[in-house]
Length: 411
Ligand SMILES: Cc1cc2nc3c(=O)[nH]c(=O)nc-3n(C[C@H](O)[C@H](O)[C@H](O)COP(=O)(O)OP(=O)(O)OC[C@H]3O[C@@H](n4cnc5c(N)ncnc54)[C@H](O)[C@@H]3O)c2cc1C
Image 1 (tube, protein in one colour):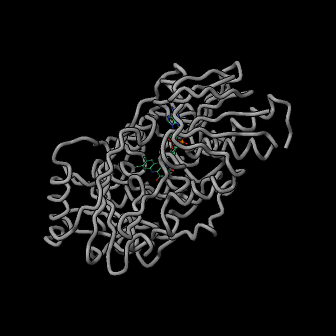
Image 2 (cartoon, helix red, strand yellow):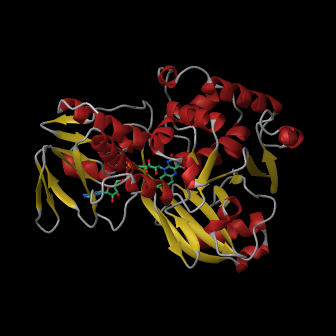
Image 3 (tube, rainbow, N blue to C red):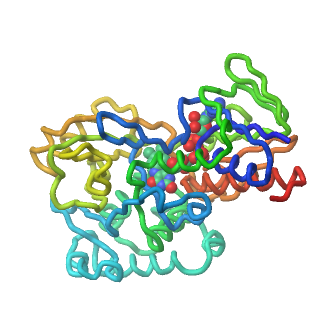
């Protein structure tokens, strides 16, 4: 029995691993020159550049199942954030987790004291009960949800907007509030960080757990049914089942299913002689209106392996934009106001413009969409579950287990 999988992102890799665990032969056909899909890291002159700024939330349940975090040598961000308000940086953190920042958090003008108490109450509510319970709550846009919870505009704009523009590529807080609550739950119950040698180590580790020769690179599928696929160039591959594990837009083209839409983002990677002060291992947010960069992270402060000795690597995220002319000039102008004239000496290493960062998941959130399209044709990827590492892994596993069951195979 053999299964052909199109795409070597997290979903395709998790699907292949699940099938191989059941003793089923699984082959992956990947169009690009490497494994990982959206989770890859490139080495450039001693720097490690992820494909856009991204982090791993260790509380994702599928991470425990598929990833050996110890082997990844995880490096963690500090809990909380540095938030720029009124031209000053303030450190804010959960006072239960970082009591030493209680006073600074209480004084930070990100919102009123009532806003901060509502924030604590929301974190408690998002962490309570099971994920299934949470998914049964009512769903609306994140902005409407925050307004219903009586957060002030100041709190929404200073804090929630820059935080979730980075995490959900959602500068206008349009994404499903259930999606927002799921992420808030993961942030509250776990840690967030990056593997010491870059996010791409996650997918490399998963790929290395597959049988040798599982993945064929540079193989773009141009057509498929449940019994065969055609590779660009004419190769015809036959199989007992075919899984389309691409991003949502490509799956739509190959299968004729609805396109989930895309949330875009850009990231500028800067090299500096010294790290900007006052940020350290926090993610820094700027919620001021009309600014270019929504969040900033000093990757080399979190893991020294992200930059060569004596250098700092800074990731500046600009969610919601991609091809804009003048993006770098705008970002530099903004960062000069934020960090100071030293920004003029920063060198731009690369600008990532990512058209399909996430599938667009507005309310109502459709988690656990069907993976069986009938006639031995299957589909998985973050667009079938949630737009995240967790969603991609989960959908890949779901597809793998369902295929094994349909073929009458037990592990
Ligand atoms: C900038 C950015 C930041 C992010 N930040 C986070 C974060 O902090 N935390 C988090 O949890 N998630 C984050 N995500 C989301 C997360 O990375 C994705 O949800 C996840 O990686 C999706 O995996 P996937 O396997 O579903 O799809 P993909 O990674 O897109 O994999 C699909 C694969 O299919 C291949 N392919 C496409 N078409 C074909 C074809 N015709 N033939 C053969 N192969 C094909 C592609 O080359 C690709 O390798 C971020 C994403 C981006 C882009």
